[in-house]
Amino acid sequence: MPTIHRSALAAALAAGTLLAVSACGPDGPPGDTNSPAPPPSSAPAQAAGSGSGGVIGGITLPSGIPTSLLEGLPKSWDDLKKWKFEDWDKWASKHVFNNPVVKDFWDPDKMGDSKPADPAPPAAKPAPATPKPATDDGVTDPEPAVVKAVTVPRPYTKQPSGKVFFSAQGGRGNCSATVIADPQHPGKSNLVWTAGHCVHEGKGGNFYKDLVFVPAYNNSGASSGGKRAPLSELAPLGTWWADQVTTSPQWMVEGSATGDAANQYDFAIMRVHNQNDTGKSLEETVGSAVPVWFDAPRDQLKVTATGYPLAKPFDGQELYKCDGGKPTRLSFDAKRPTMLTIGCNMTQGASGGGWFATMPDGRTALVSNTSIGTQEHTSLSGPYLETVARQALDWISKK
Image (cartoon, rainbow, N blue to C red):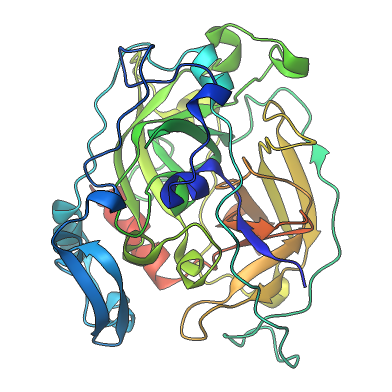
């Protein structure tokens, strides 16, 4: 049975198995190119006075989590589905995202040297269950046939896809992401969808730093084939810094370096702005933004996943896609939305990349994002987006 891994450097960073600084050159904190980045104050190793685990209202609490992180936690994860804007706002006020702009921080060298690494030993994949209707939760289907990723034709400037870059404990990482429509600001969205593990360390951790989105990354192909292109070629539509970020409370409390139940809520949304303000929104600048299709009918989906895979045989400089067709199911916890799985050979770096399907009205919509994949690079899995994901988008849209 194939084993599961997290599809981005964030997996290794969250687990403490960091990409060695020596492997990617000096990579220190902003303004310092000679010393390694110190661990953030929220690192798991410094979680003194943290909770000791146990079960509260049906939630199994991992040990080693700072008590402050658990403030405002619902009595059960089912209660989270009942949260309103005010509840999400209260939670956000206790888990503040702070991402000051560091002018010209992300240059071609830092972007080029941010490499994903293999995570800690993977969790075992659940054994396939007896086939049931595809609407049933708690079911894991047999492994789908692998699909070979193909390059997306250039130019990328009309695509809603791009790359996310961030600084974390001891290194710098990257993921893939998608420009999504903002319900409160139609035609002028500044929202980006990615994976939760691309913005937050998970269990016992905090949000990443220097978090930016680069739409149409390497649009012209100037950095393909091992070349180092200027920033104007890598980021033709600018560098967009995150002002606000939200991810699921499940990911923040339980997220780990291996595929498990936390990945069933492994999504995130960022509100961004152009560090060189042009007066235009991200959507106006890119020329497109896709709606998010919540509670999409599984039986009717034909999914295409996109991303910038970086681990071999890929190099992180090309946008790829896998036409995965009808997704199968993957579940670690029957009480949570069963994940979508498609055959695809994309590797680390594709994490957070959008999964698209056609809605009944003919529009292309986002239905998931890459969260985990098999060690053998035969398939990818992403969260099924329902009530909690809808609430998260509603909160950040209204903010």
